[in-house]
Image (cartoon, rainbow, N blue to C red; front, side, top):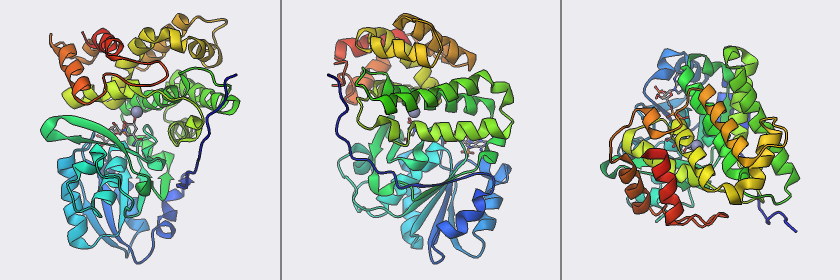
Length: 384
Ligand code: NZQ
Ligand code: ZN
């Protein structure tokens, strides 16, 4: 009889949600802290977030580092680590989306490590200590604001890698849906799809009788589907509130406890960003439907459940659910093949496949026993 796995769960990130949440910053950061204010390419200067954050921290000792790029690079983050050391910073405040949040976690660990920063990303060094991190979220998508994951790219070798740093889990995350007003539609679309696929990676495996996890995963996916169906209401506060909370819940850890997980879509998709800079959310819609077609048998029961409970289909086949998923992604103007993202190089699939192998992702021992033959078929279907 199927049953849950044992698990050990704690998520201590304090979530401060709502329109007035910036006012809490002063209470959340110790008054004596020397704070690194970390941000990206400047959206926060244009939309008033920078001003609100610095006003809430008036009189505090603040050092700024700007220029964390989307899909942050080791090369840039190491400059911030040098600044942290030079200025005696002891608190990292990231103001941005997943890229800034992930960068903040890396910096918090690397500042306390004397070796090469890539050791942390590659898993050669597992940090036990980190400077405290807080996040002001400006883009709901990744869930990075309250989880222990991070993704950093080494520009020199075009390697984009996920790593886990529990000591750098944010102490707090400020979720103020008003910051979403300046987000381009494309980032909202990416956010819905990224969050949806995060739930899939923790749900779309095989049934283990996890009534609570399945029910909650389906509730989060239904919310995301409703937000896509009501995309014309994206300027309403309620729409924004729901996306911000749904994206957080999709990858805060709670729906994945005690159930099998499958992160192969993500592990293949990172290569599309590393090679061509494609937005993270869009790489997922390119890879996932092909992966599901390849793994349709081991995932059949869960695909049927997804079709019934999330897409509202009566007695769907697994094939029907994959078709509904594609309609959903298309409704958000997502690419469903590499060529839809404008990449038409004849050797594109070869390059992706080489990178997947080089980075140790060709054969992944998940529930579906995805060997190199299956992985190559997925890559070639999505990219050739
Ligand atoms: O850099 P600025 O100028 O701030 O502009 C950003 C950036 O260009 C802009 N933006 C953010 N908030 C805005 C805004 N523009 C206007 N108004 C606002 N309020 O949006 C662009 C994209 O930002 P980014 O942070 O890169 O996007 P996202 O949140 O999607 O993060 C993507 C990164 O997170 C990683 C991805 O791989 C990628 O590197 N992920 C992290 C995960 C985690 N830590 O758990 C899980 C995910 O699966 C994902 O892999
Ligand atoms: Zn993701």
